[in-house]
Length: 409
Ligand SMILES: *Cc1c(COP(=O)(O)O)cnc(C)c1O
Image (cartoon, rainbow, N blue to C red):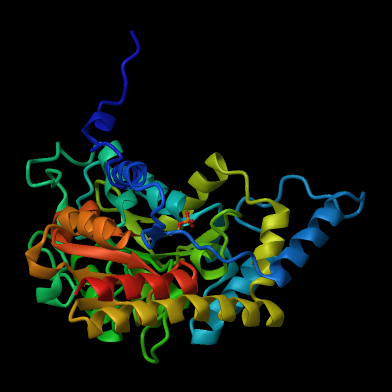
């Protein structure tokens, strides 16, 4: 008899997106001619930019030649890409990151999900609420939590509510966690952290010997000056933080797959008897044992993101999405909705009107305006009463969605 990992049975069924799909299907069967506008997606929609396509074509052709063939590459990533990342994503911010501190991977979802493996089974975990579900579910699978209660919370997991009341910046937990997941610009709330906020977190982590897992997947959408793009802009962060970055939202790589993680040389964990161990060396061991590198063609594509032409083209795509975000934000604000985010992130987070539940508002929008968004309660108990709209759609669709929502009021 083969026993299974019963922690998997604690997971709430992948409820959110299947349930959205189910409700949309029921509606379209009843209303076959209705044109439904989807602003629920967390995926990019614009095509890969020409400079990146050219880099892939040229790398693919190289692979077909004797001199240009590449087999297994370095697991950590080719030096040409590590160098481009260090120079462009960090050097330009005045932050010094060495090539050996960067690990290229096939996605931040995997990185955010895998990182917990190198920490103790009894590590205490803190997550934002609402939250990107990957942080929670991977710790449930690893057995760090108990069952989920009727309040939607797993036992033995520290939830840090971010709501309108605290400006979407959670208070420090009463019980000090070992690992703290932070995501800025935030998915789903679209809010960002100032230097002061991050500085306070870095000091908190230092004081409690905690490690911050900083997910910066939406860094490229920051438009306001003075908002930190990397946690390493904060003094002392190298000793307490791991940073996750991805080409997915930045450069439309959701279908190409390339991301990276930064683990500074100074970052230390501890053995049971208090001996310091380099976190980077543990991750390096894990990465090189379980991962065989991102394809040469994809790493060449990622390198092109940093070329002069690449930067210009990608800035245009981001501007397109952010114009959508502005239209949604301003459109809904004018109608009296309480809206957050959408300035430094491609997500708009809104308070549902008349204290409707997240799912009631979902049904209301679908029914009356044929607009699909994402119920906030799907991201955690504190998301109840909120709703997420994404700016990753087509400009015309966004304009029509706003018009239809105005007609409701
Ligand atoms: C989209 C997203 C990622 C990136 O995932 P990839 O696996 O790199 O595509 C990471 N974190 C958050 C919060 C995201 O929304």
